[in-house]
Image (tube, rainbow, N blue to C red; front, side, top):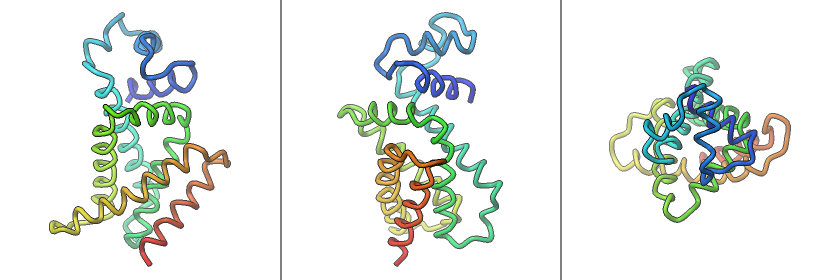
Length: 178
């Protein structure tokens, strides 16, 4: 988690992006790692991005476990999980925006789709979904159709604690249930 947090912090504070050669240097300096250490550990930026997305996924689960999902219906579980994810990301909004921009490039869209699928799969898993038929796929695709607009809304949301994003998620989930 320290490496993911350091990348997020450096992207948040420095005027760097994913294409900057100095990005690894700043993170190595931040973590007191030897020069070129990260280049040896991570063969590509996509591996670092996967690390960061995995960090957000783990934090989403940890934070939502604290609020106890077991007593909620499925729609509320999914809402709380999504809100937990965006709440975690709100601490690094500038970095998330840079990450989203990088994943928007044509060569990176497959990584973006795969990571979004994995996030939606994780959400459904923790909401208690056990389907194995076509519903398994349709539920995740429907959730992706909620997640992506929520992410876009989140990136331009300037409200306190991303309150408007949390309300947006509730409305999107409510519409899909009806």
